[in-house]
Length: 429
Image 1: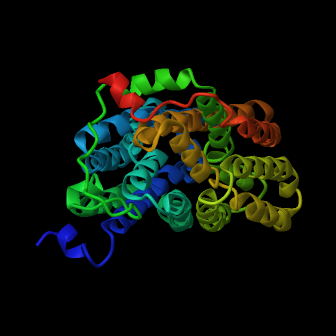
Image 2: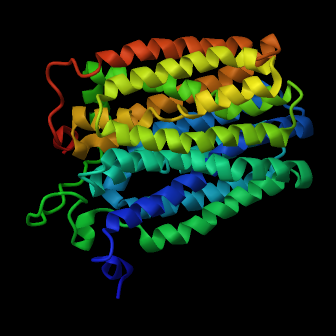
């Protein structure tokens, strides 16, 4: 008897899909969190500058985001499970090979290109596709839980990776995250399913009715058609622009540079990693509650609140370093609750604007803007640190642009004609 048939009647299989997706995204978060711990050890061993290491990280973040909409189209055509298994194998190989590198271009190729493209499947677009395919009710809550997986990954991996770097060397930490990808791979192959119709189910919460056939798969050119449709939509520009700032102010800046910035103020590497992991702990609460709120409140006002609070916390961060642990603890609490709380309302607005069937590709492009912002901050932060000798200008600039984003999101939803459902697939057919 198949696993999905055995589970049917006991619990809706959508929750099994959520669990598998959560574990996969958690593993991907552990892989993506590694550069913050590895930055200074790589500088010490190879003599590379902060800008050199940051450049490889920026390539990773950029390709991680840029591949999102194409991966969404690929998952729609080939199936989510098949693409996820292939990507996990690619990531494991790319990460493991970094232990053999001897030149900076190899870091850019392996960690930047190979791992960046491989983790593109395990991005926020995957959570959006799972939530919208498998759930009619509780979509916001599910997306909040899946988004929180990145924070859980930080919580589990960062202190461990930092401790391994200190006691066993950076190569041991790299081999650990490669092994995690290989462990998750058979779990995905065994339990992941592409659509509730594949196991004879309706999406969770959908009223009783005959199960309809799956919609036609997206055409090969659907990602480019989706981008063309998006570029003609003011709401797309507002969503993508605000999400660019989200990426710039989270995993691009804090995720990459908080640990080295904290170490420069006399705090040990393990303690610095624990601070970033603590942000992850708080974000589990913040993002899950954000998903719950996105089902009930106006998502534009939620985003305005989130970006405003994040901006204030980043403006405070340079002063927090001067007040030792008390100031940093205040920053961690204030910023941590807001870390990626923007994802559920942004994905919800994208689904409402472009249609649930289009959300994979359209949110993929919006997420690509997020990672472009992350790549900008990852490289720009390292470059400014090399030029100016500290991070003060970088952190305060990020805080100011977050305040700008708080105003931009209030304009979302005032466009007269939304894109009609299935427009991406129809136009790309």
